[in-house]
Amino acid sequence: MKRGLIVMLAVLSGPVLAAPQEIKLWRHDTGDLDMAAGRAAVERFNRAQTQWKVVVEAIPQGSYTESITAASMVGQLPCIIALDQPTVPNFAWAGHIRPLETLLPQPALAQLLEGGRGTYKGQIYSVGQLDVVLALFARRSQLAALGIRVATMEQPYTAEEFHLLLTTAKQSGRYRFPLDLNGRFKGEWYSYAFSPWLQSAGTDLIDRANYLRVDGVLNNDSAVAVGRYYGKLFKEKLAERHPADDKAFEQGRALLHYTGSWKARDYTELFGDDLVVMPPPDFGHGPKIGAASWQWGITRSCRQPEGAAAFLAHLISPSEIAAASRMTGLVPVSVGSAALTEHYRPGGDWRTYFDYAQRYAVPRPATPAYPALSSTFEKAMADIRSGKDAAEALDEAVEAIEHNIARNNGYGYSARKAGGGL
Image (spheres, one colour):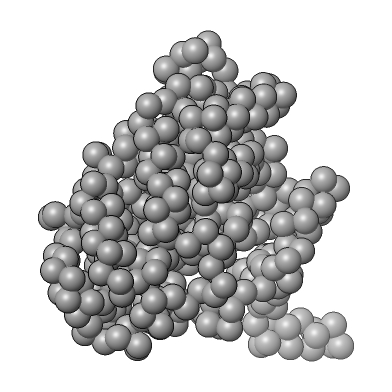
C-alpha cells in the first residue's frame, strides 16, 4: 500500500525538470552602459529557455588578456570568452577557440557586416554585436568661415585637398594645430587609425594573399608616401606631436578631429546641428576605416558547445544587436538590426556611421602575427612623428615583422600553399 501511494504521488507530481546546464562566460569589465547591456542580454536568454543558463564572470580590463592567456595554458578556459577581434587569429592558431560555421545558423552569420566577424584562414571564429567607425569631425560654421567645403561620401577629401585645407586653416591664424590626431593615444590606435590610410593608398601592413610577405607591402612607394604625408603633418605643425590634453576640438582649438564614433554622443550634445561628420581622406583608392571591436568566441575545451552556440546565435539576432546598440549608442553590425534603432535606421541622425561601416570598413589583417604587426607599426609611426624618414622607419618595421613571422614558422601559413606565393 505504501509503495503504491509513493508511485501515485510521483505520477501526480509530474516529471522532475532537469536544472539548466551552466555555460560559463568570461568578459572584461568595461563601462557601465556596456556591462548593463551585456547583463540584460544574458537575462533575456536565460529567461527564454530552460536548457541552458549563462553565468558571467567579469574580469578587470587591465588583467583580462593575461587571465585568459594563463587559463588557456592550463586548460581552464570557460565556454565563452570575449576577444578583441584583431587577437582572434592568434587564439585560433593556438587552438584555444573553435570555428563557428557548423555551430551557428548560416543566415545569422551571413547578415553580419565586416565588423561583426573574426576570422582565421577563411573560417569564422568569433562574432560581435557592435562596432565603432572612424570619421572626421568638424563644425559647419568653422569650415564655412574658411571657405572650406564639407566632404561627403560622394566626394570625400583627396589627400592633397585635405593637406591644403589644413594649411589654409593654419595660415588663417585661428588654429595653431588645425588637426587633432589623438596624439595622446597609444597602442592599437596607430594600426586602427592609420593602416586604413595605407589601404586607401592601395597597400597594407602585410600581403593578405599569403600573410607571410611584408617586404614590398609595408615599405613600397605607396606606403612610404603615406608615411611621409603623416610625418609632414607634424613637421608643418598641422597636428600637434605631444598634445597636453584631448580637448582641442571641443574647445575650438582644432578645426578637425580624426577619431572614432565613440565621440558621437558627446559632440552631438556639444554642437548640435553645427556638427558635421565626414569620411576620412582618400589616398587614391577611396576612404577606408578599421573594422571590428570586442567579440565572442567558443573555446575548444567547452563541454556544451551547442549551448554556447545557442547563446551566440541569440546575441547576433537583429533584436539583440539593436537592443545593445540602443543601450550603448554603438554601431550595430547588421542591416536588420540598424533598422530597429532610432539612431542608425535609414534617415536616423547617426546613420552616417552605419553607412561608413558598410562602405569603408576593412578588417585588420587576419593573422596570428597581428599583435607583432600592430606594435611594430606603432613604433614606426611614432618614429616618423618624431622626424625619422618614413622609408627608414618602414624598412625597420618590415625587418622586425618578417623576423617575427619566421620565428613562429609562418603562424600556420605556408608559402607553398599561398595564393600570392613568395
